Each structure stands twice: as structure tokens, then as C-alpha cells.
Length: 561
Image (cartoon, rainbow, N blue to C red; front, side, top):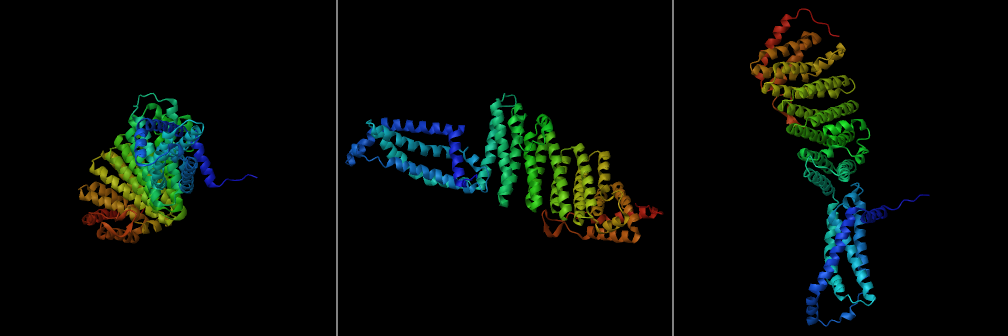
């Protein structure tokens, strides 16, 4: 029958194994042992003669009678105290901070201190054994008892406190982030044309991926929202720093090392690895996959604020990629946004909950406006197509999840903002007209049951309200032609709803546009800004006149499927 060792014993075994097996630990041991030996010799040659005279002048000292029998026992006890303290601290901390032992065993100060305790013990045992063989080592005894032992007694409590503080989740997060940042900084100093040794190539990539994996584990194991938020923002910070270093990294760094190819994030992407290597996006892809997994987890557990923070970091990365002109990364960010929207719709449909999608579409819309700011017309065209597609998805899901009707309004709001920005930047008229038509398609879905359409569009007027709000913007700019397009498009509602219900619905829209203020009387995740507000209500009457012109032209109502 197999037995399981208690957690503290397992942790102690790991500590001892890492102390004796890792190269960094052995380097620390060599440094400490060499330092103790040199300090012993320097004390013997230069300090002990003066110290001996000082003691003999003030005290009656008989060097041959110095009792040294207790010293090895004391040192063994103290070393055991240090290792025991580390074992207990790491055992308890590792319950909420996974792989803490790996992080600790790469911490130079901790390694040096543990080896210093062991070195002091070995120093004492060695000089005692040598002294018993008849070789006088009084200076070394004095160095051990009067220098090393007091230093240890003064430092052990601060060291244990430092270890306790360093096991705090926030300190672990910062240690992981700064460790990865320093690694990238060192690699960037080599330059893009540097020949990266194979061993360094593999070890550095592996170290960076392990840091990302540990951060992702913290999202799962840590129970506190503040720590999870710190990890999410840490992903964003590290990716931002990575983009600073990226142009200066050795070209070979972007070749995925065999040691990393088996990483869990890449096992299902083996066919895409050559493409990721060529685009230099394997690191960003790894980080965004982990962040996307966190987003899905937060969806499923109802942690709306954390899922929103994931979307915000994705938006910031997209903006940063636009600033540095990293086209492959912009494509990756767009795909991640679409992937998150797909999971958001699935979650919203299952739970009749629009909150996640509301926040996600807001950040997606902000990303699209960044695209507009950087004149990325092709990508704006693609994203507008995605908005219409996901709007159709939300509309189709409304039979099972009526709350998703609100997401149609949110998509309309974001498209409206982007169109106004395009108009302000005087984009190509033909391109703008195509996007404007896509905007008007948000409430013009095909193959819809008439009764369902009448019931839906008579109660959910947000999309049409945004259409009319944009028409009022054009009227304020003196561009009546586009307002005519909106007025003509509303005739579909007239034919669908009939004169009475149409007039009632339009009256509700106009009243809302006329009297709604810029802020709402309740707070939301996006503050209390009223997304249905228009600053141009003075043009409502003119828009109504345009509608009347088109209504007067309608003689035979069109049939609606």
C-alpha cells in the first residue's frame, strides 16, 4: 500500500534536493564557502593579534581552557531552525501560491543565507575536528564564536521575517514579473543580430513561459480578487514591456525552442508554430491564451469585474501594438477579442446575462476607435463586419435570452462612436458610406418571423434610437443627405409595425432623445454616462419632417417575411 508523506516533509525534501542539485544553489554554496574561508584567514592574519591583546589586557584569558564542545550542537540546532522555518512558511504559503518552492530556490538572498548557515556549521565542525587532532586553531574558534555566531543570532529573525513577507501573493507576483522583465532586458542588450547560444535560447524561453504559467496558476489558486486583478494587470504590464524590448531581441529568440514546444498552450497549435515564429508573436500568443483562459473562468464564476479587466488589458495591448506598428500582433488582438465575444455570447445565452458582453463590447469598440485613429481602414472594415455578425447572433439568441437585446444597443453605440470619429477625421466618402450601411443593418436582419419582429422592435428601440441620434449629428453638421438615409431606413419600421405602432414607437424614441441627459440616474460598470444621449435634440423636428416626406411616398406597404 502506497503511503503519502506529510506536506512539510515533502517540502523539506524539495528544499534539500534543490539546494544540492540546482546550479544556482551550488554557485551560492561556492560563493559562501569561499567567503567564509577567506574571512577566516583574514581574521587570523590581521584582526586576531590585536583582538587577542585587547582581551588579554582586560580579562584573564586562558586560551587552552576555551570550551568548544557545545558549539557544533548549537550550530546544528540553529541550521535546523532555519530550514524548519523555511519548510513551515513555504508549506503553508504554497497552498495558495503554487510552485513557490521554484521561485524561492531562484532567490539569491535566500540561497546565500541558507548556505551561510550550513557553511558556519561546517566551519565549526571542521575546526573542532582539526583541533582534536592536535593542531591549534584558536583564531578560527574565536572567529566562529565571536563573529559568525553573533551575526547569525542578529540576522535569523530578520531573515525569517523577510521570507514571510516574500511569500505574500503580491510579492510573488512582483517577483515573477520583474524576473521576466530582467530576462527580456538582458536578451535585448544582445541585439537583433546576436548569435543566441542554444542552451541560453532554451533556458530563457522556458524561464519566461514558466513565469507566465505561474501567473496563470495564481489566477486559479489565489482566492482574493485584489491579487487576481494584480495578476491580470501584470500580464498587461509585462506585454507592454515586451513590446519595448521586442525590436532589440535576437532574431533566434523568436524561434520556438523544442523545450517550449510541449508547453500546454502550444500542444494544440503545432501546425501554427511556423506562422507564429515568422510573425514574431509566439510570446504574445502564449500570454493572451492564458489571459483568455482566465476570462472564461471569470465568466463561469460570475466575476464580472475581473473579466472586464481582462478585456481592458487586451484593449491596451491593441492600442500599444498600433503605436509601434506591430501588424501581426494587431491581428492577434482582434482574434482574441472575437474569441472572447463568442464565449461571452455563449455565457449570456445560457445565463440570460448581458453584463460581461456589455463590458467586453465597450472595450472592443474602444479598440476599433484606436484603429480609426491610426487610419487602419482595412481592419476597421473587418471589425464592423464582426459587429454586424455578432449583432445577428445576439438577435437570434433573444428568444432564449431576452437580456441580450441590450447588447444590440451596445454594439450600435460603439459603431456610432466609430462612425462619428471617421466623419471627424474626414475618411474616404465611399468607405464611410459602406460602414454607415453596415450600421443601419443592425436592425434589418433577414428571414425573421413577422410577429417576433413586430414584438421585438416595438419594445427594443435602442438600435433605431442610435440611428436617429447619428442622423441628428449629421443634421447638426449640415449634411442632410445622410440624415435622409436614416429617415428612409426607418420606413422599414413603418411597413413592419404599421402607422399607429410606428408613430407610437417613434414618439417614444423622440421623447427619449429630447429629454434624456448626458448622465443616468443609476450607476453601471461604465459609470453613469447615458449611452442614448444626443447633444443635438434641436434637430428632431427636421428629422420628423424627413420621415413625413418618405411616408407620403409610401402607397403600397412592402411585405415582410
